[in-house]
Amino acid sequence: MPRKKLRIILDTNVLFAGLYSSQGASFKILKAIDEGKLQAVLSTTLLFEYEDILKRNQAILGLSDHEVEKILDYLCLKSEHQKIYFLWRPYLSDPNDDHLLELAVASGAGLITTHNTKDFKGVERFNVKTITPKNLLEELV
Image (cartoon, rainbow, N blue to C red):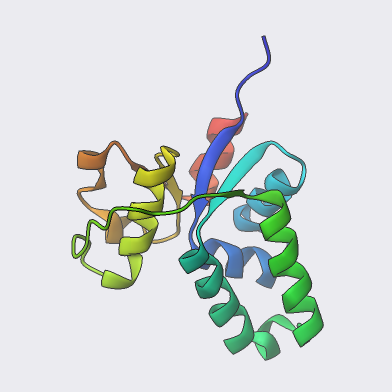
């Protein structure tokens, strides 16, 4: 029986790191999504956050407006889309991360991939786990 694809919420810092360098675990996470080994879950709020971060950092990432739009379109194509009906905020120490917790709960994905796991203290209460890209790759093996 084939193993069920792991569903994840991809924090913006992982997307940024994966686009910034092809050497690290974040890039390998993006590649695993591309190859269908991981299923990213996306909300409208998270998509807008991706767009904001990518456009603000275009020069650093070396991306044109067209390339940013293509990346966002591709993420939409490869991701499962989830509407959020219940808000749990304020809950996290960084209110800008509350929408990730809400997406994890609403989708049942239960796994947030981030470089800032310390910002998500207490999410276990919602049956949600945070994991770094490096640790996620180790679980995929």
